[in-house]
Image (cartoon, rainbow, N blue to C red):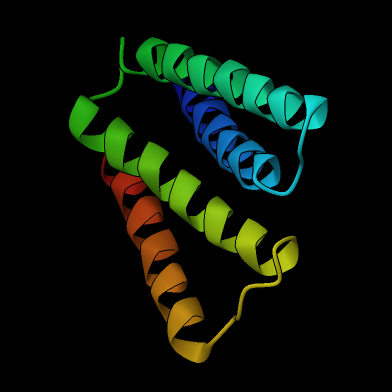
Length: 107
Protein backbone atom coordinates (compact mmCIF):
# COMPACT_ATOMS: atom_id res chain seq x y z
CA UNK A 1 0.00 0.00 0.00
CA UNK A 2 2.84 2.40 0.75
CA UNK A 3 4.22 1.91 -2.77
CA UNK A 4 0.86 3.16 -4.02
CA UNK A 5 1.19 6.23 -1.76
CA UNK A 6 4.67 6.79 -3.14
CA UNK A 7 3.53 6.55 -6.76
CA UNK A 8 0.63 8.91 -6.08
CA UNK A 9 3.05 11.32 -4.36
CA UNK A 10 5.25 11.26 -7.47
CA UNK A 11 2.26 11.91 -9.71
CA UNK A 12 1.27 14.83 -7.48
CA UNK A 13 4.79 16.16 -7.97
CA UNK A 14 4.23 16.01 -11.73
CA UNK A 15 0.87 17.74 -11.28
CA UNK A 16 2.33 20.60 -9.25
CA UNK A 17 5.06 21.09 -11.85
CA UNK A 18 2.37 21.21 -14.56
CA UNK A 19 0.38 23.78 -12.57
CA UNK A 20 3.49 25.89 -12.13
CA UNK A 21 4.14 25.75 -15.87
CA UNK A 22 0.56 26.70 -16.63
CA UNK A 23 0.57 29.59 -14.17
CA UNK A 24 3.16 31.44 -16.21
CA UNK A 25 0.92 31.44 -19.30
CA UNK A 26 -2.14 32.95 -17.61
CA UNK A 27 -2.83 36.37 -16.13
CA UNK A 28 -5.38 37.64 -13.67
CA UNK A 29 -7.62 35.22 -11.79
CA UNK A 30 -6.59 32.20 -13.89
CA UNK A 31 -2.99 32.69 -12.81
CA UNK A 32 -4.04 32.46 -9.16
CA UNK A 33 -6.14 29.34 -9.80
CA UNK A 34 -3.10 27.57 -11.24
CA UNK A 35 -0.95 28.71 -8.33
CA UNK A 36 -3.64 27.51 -5.90
CA UNK A 37 -3.68 24.11 -7.61
CA UNK A 38 0.12 24.09 -7.36
CA UNK A 39 -0.07 24.55 -3.58
CA UNK A 40 -2.72 21.82 -3.21
CA UNK A 41 -0.72 19.28 -5.23
CA UNK A 42 2.49 20.25 -3.42
CA UNK A 43 0.95 19.64 -0.01
CA UNK A 44 -0.71 16.42 -1.16
CA UNK A 45 2.60 15.19 -2.56
CA UNK A 46 4.39 15.85 0.73
CA UNK A 47 1.65 14.19 2.80
CA UNK A 48 1.67 11.09 0.59
CA UNK A 49 5.47 10.93 0.65
CA UNK A 50 5.43 11.18 4.45
CA UNK A 51 2.86 8.37 4.59
CA UNK A 52 4.96 6.20 2.25
CA UNK A 53 8.15 6.53 4.29
CA UNK A 54 6.42 5.22 7.40
CA UNK A 55 7.35 1.73 6.18
CA UNK A 56 9.55 2.26 3.12
CA UNK A 57 13.20 3.22 3.58
CA UNK A 58 13.79 6.91 2.95
CA UNK A 59 16.86 6.03 0.88
CA UNK A 60 14.56 4.25 -1.58
CA UNK A 61 11.38 6.32 -1.34
CA UNK A 62 12.92 9.73 -1.92
CA UNK A 63 14.82 8.84 -5.13
CA UNK A 64 11.77 7.01 -6.50
CA UNK A 65 9.57 10.03 -5.70
CA UNK A 66 11.95 12.48 -7.36
CA UNK A 67 12.46 10.09 -10.28
CA UNK A 68 8.74 9.84 -10.96
CA UNK A 69 8.56 13.62 -10.76
CA UNK A 70 11.54 14.10 -13.07
CA UNK A 71 10.37 11.64 -15.71
CA UNK A 72 6.81 12.90 -15.57
CA UNK A 73 7.85 16.53 -15.76
CA UNK A 74 10.09 15.92 -18.78
CA UNK A 75 7.25 14.08 -20.53
CA UNK A 76 4.85 16.92 -19.69
CA UNK A 77 7.36 19.37 -21.11
CA UNK A 78 7.53 17.41 -24.33
CA UNK A 79 3.81 16.78 -24.77
CA UNK A 80 2.26 19.95 -23.34
CA UNK A 81 4.93 22.64 -23.47
CA UNK A 82 6.42 21.60 -26.84
CA UNK A 83 9.96 21.05 -25.58
CA UNK A 84 12.37 19.07 -27.76
CA UNK A 85 12.59 15.28 -27.42
CA UNK A 86 16.21 14.75 -28.41
CA UNK A 87 17.94 11.37 -28.43
CA UNK A 88 20.08 12.17 -25.40
CA UNK A 89 17.15 13.49 -23.44
CA UNK A 90 15.20 10.28 -24.05
CA UNK A 91 18.30 8.18 -23.35
CA UNK A 92 18.80 9.71 -19.92
CA UNK A 93 15.10 9.52 -19.10
CA UNK A 94 15.25 5.80 -19.90
CA UNK A 95 18.27 5.35 -17.64
CA UNK A 96 16.38 7.15 -14.89
CA UNK A 97 13.40 4.80 -15.31
CA UNK A 98 15.70 1.78 -15.18
CA UNK A 99 17.23 3.14 -11.97
CA UNK A 100 13.79 3.64 -10.39
CA UNK A 101 12.77 0.07 -11.26
CA UNK A 102 16.10 -1.17 -9.87
CA UNK A 103 15.53 0.63 -6.56
CA UNK A 104 12.05 -0.83 -6.25
CA UNK A 105 13.35 -4.31 -7.06
CA UNK A 106 16.06 -4.13 -4.43
CA UNK A 107 13.84 -2.92 -1.59
